[in-house]
Length: 442
Image (cartoon, rainbow, N blue to C red):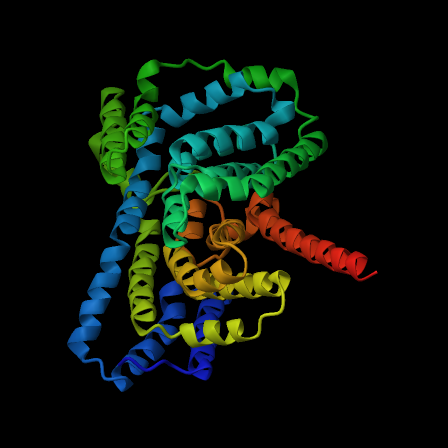
């Protein structure tokens, strides 16, 4: 069981997995059916390599165990939105949002608010849960393009997910690359600041183009609604509990229960609450009936990832890529390509960090330095999963804001700007190196 798999086998796995998933997306069928061909191929490889059925079952169980927190969060999100809506929380949050902002700078406000919040929380999903729904709802009421609003909210949420020292992904990257959070943050500083500035400029232009026609009269009518402090208890509890590092599952449960109790206190019947928990809220989302297929896909993806990690099937391809190394630009493009492939076939954010980091650390440490690799991976590996429709991170993000990935991705500029920026930096470094060598030789 210790022999490596061939590049041909790794390539075939990628082809089978991608064909299945892309076909399911095109045909509008459950992603569960899309990932099954790749999973079956992995099981066949496991059996051929000598793994017994009970070993495969054990790995499958472990794989589902690794995604159980994600399953619980998505399960609870299906109840969170209805409970907040029935308690009047979302209506009050939208009213406060509309009172607090100048609608002519709405997109920039969305980005900056979610960015600051995510830097404090260190979690994109926590930020989207607390701020995403009221901001998107405000955009709908103001007749502002929802796709651009979602792009601004997602961009801001992932600033913290990638950059905050409190982010679990940021900490995992530092741990895998055997560096400190401080050194890693310093290495990321230039691309981080540049990306934030460009993103602000982008949404400023969007504001000039799309929000100038909003009339103050409409703004006042929407925002002058009765607001009660009680209605803010569910989101306040969620944010405070997350900030104090209480288990996020407990945080969601407490927030849902508080919202449900407020709804009951306001005269909403128990049967209506249960019905909303199952069917969701029209136009807002939520509801377990819309979620069970997604939950099943994530469980199956957990099994897939567990087998993929155990068999180590991608490693031969990574090793071959590293054999021919000519420059930092070449190595950067290879590393980006490798991590993109891993992100495409893996269903989460964690596995690409671990696999890319372990595979490339020694090479980058010997030829350059590990902080360069940290910057490169922070600009790509931490963000690619949010741009892949079948990745758990993208699924959770789009589920919380109740919008499909392809609708907001063109405007989620922070996600795709950083990979482009980091490639540009490495091209610039290669040009500078070439010019220095030319001057010396002259």
